[in-house]
Amino acid sequence: MVKLVIFDCDGTLVDGQHLILDSMQTASKYCNIAYPGDEAVRQIVGLSLLEAISLVYPGENDKIHRQLQEAFITRFQEIRRLEQDHEPLFDGVVEALIRLNDEGYLLGVATGKSRRGLEMTLKNHDLGQYFVTLNTADDGPGKPHPSMVDNAMKDVGAVPENTAMIGDTSYDMLMAKAANVKAIGVDWGYHSFETLEQSGADHVLDHISKIHQIID
Image (cartoon, rainbow, N blue to C red; front, side, top):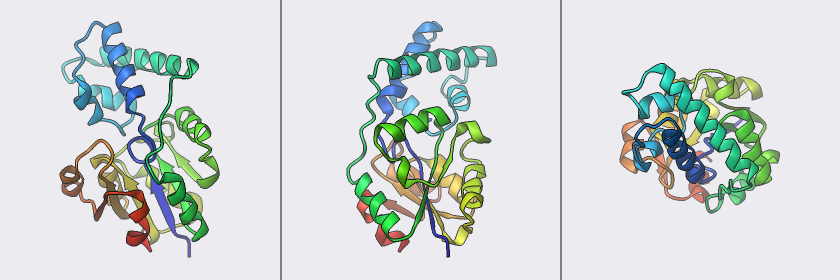
């Protein structure tokens, strides 16, 4: 029977916040709009970019949101070109992925990143070999819509009863619940333990090595 574990990326596998914060600060400056602060931006990590921008700049219109989106992407790509895009892995990630693979679990990613951004991150850390299904903001509705989880299950022939979603934000937990899969939060990312629980997390991990105690 197919067993599928789906991971969020930013805040769960890697800590990419400095790229996101830098790009949003630069976009705000370029558009001559007050930056809302790092904590406000961390809270929308995981959503598709345009939706995230509309939430963090609620007083601006769609035209400004799209200008911010374009400026964000320009700065993000510039950081990539300058090779200043280090997104450190959280402790224990590689070991956990290897163990899950060895135990027969199929692994996927569901992320608010673009496909290009996700593939670059996986390449930088040599993680691509562990995942058999990738779903990004380019592939359909973003979180918390269940589309990415539904697509991952279709990709590998899994059913909700044998699928788990691992993530650090309320959007991950709400997406998991909408797809009727197990929702497992992690407390080393961008949303608090309390926020994850309130969003429906079945469990909240304090280290990725403990994932096996939950899903086995």
